[in-house]
Length: 231
Image (cartoon, rainbow, N blue to C red; front, side, top):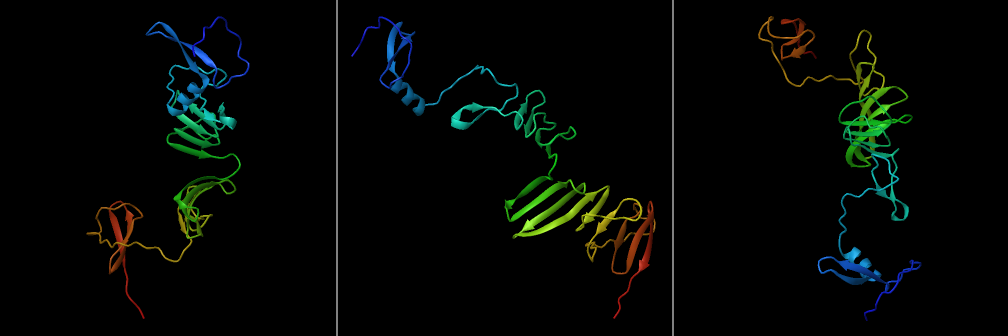
């Protein structure tokens, strides 16, 4: 049924069968649509909006649906730096393309930090089969380890004060910086025989073959010691 609109009043309660006037500019006529038709159209189709400005938001806000579906911002925990193209999670001043957690030195790539707890980066299949690299606050080390079939292999590789540790969280070197292996065997899998004592080499390089152990004692200068079996 068509009705003539003679006056307008403020809306207090909206009902599905309420009629809204709509101007069809293509035909220069006034048409009508019900509230229910608008609701059904919004469910059945996508709303495309461009050039919208929402007040009350901070520049860099990454919006999300909060409680009750309300558009929400939380810049302390989710922030986009559009000038430098950086995303901060738990950080409103990201120093890298992806910055998670506490503020660290500026850089590129991924930054993971935490002011009080260990910062951990994990890769894996599930909770019982994974690898992890962590900054351990208590000892100021980088520790790389794995968890395989629910068994932890901690400190497989450790970086501390310029030293490298394997299976130790506290690599100790008597002089200078070096490698500390908390194990019984050092394996160099492939044999190499220098052509002669003046063969190409760098100071400190070590190699072996079935007859000798070779050590480069100076640039392009090798010495060797014979090895033999026993028993």
